[in-house]
Image 1: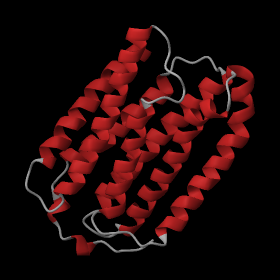
Image 2 (image 1 turned 90 degrees about the vertical axis):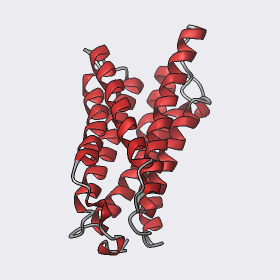
Image 3 (image 1 turned 180 degrees about the horizontal axis):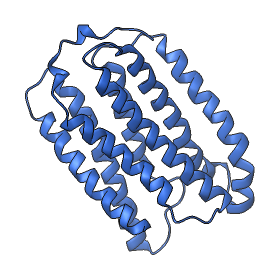
Length: 225
């Protein structure tokens, strides 16, 4: 079942990538938005490929914190950039909420997962950093997507912002489930996290296949924190 979900996940990722790059090459007022999202999902694919190549070539599992993480971190940076800029720049006060959310997530992750991770998996704090990094980044992106969704209420962007928020929330939930099972050695088929990872692409597919209301002027969206 896990292999089936992974296969479907790669197919959905490729479909999302194809649609994103198609939008990116199409003249549009929001072309840069699609370019940023296309680059983000490309980083995700490249990270997965690098991970697989490493395991096949070396015959060993990838370290919890390695150069491959660069691809995944860039994914977050690109998505965050897109959410911050489009369709209008968010208020500077939004940084307070985003940083606060990430700090709170960091405290929770280190308090809940650090000692069990050291006891069960060994290593040092740098190895744990590769585990703790993603829930914190997820918290920041989900918080940013929430602020973008609030700012889009009652505008042509409302539906798109809601779908982007659902996509970011699904990805964060999947990562949290995966981290919990890894650290606490829970026996699992991996189905639940794969469902949420797949849901991330499905929400984006719904957004991409919907009506093209993104031609609406960005001034229809409120600029608020």
